[in-house]
Length: 83
Image (spheres, rainbow, N blue to C red):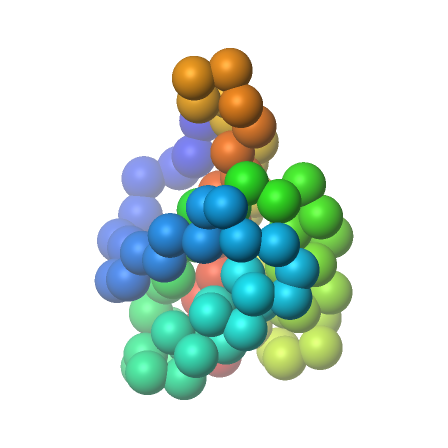
């Protein structure tokens, strides 16, 4: 279960495959202020490692990742804090 926190923007990247979830997250973060939190919903299993690498490379904080099952299909939630 994810810890409660303020989400400033939510991005639905479900159904998209690499590199689209990362590219959309990068654009969303560029429109946000430092310290704000972006929630990304994805269905691509590769998004787990992709967002880990993205956070390391960009200096944004990957606060949390969670894998859920929605209607029998995997869904991944990524929380990033804008640097």
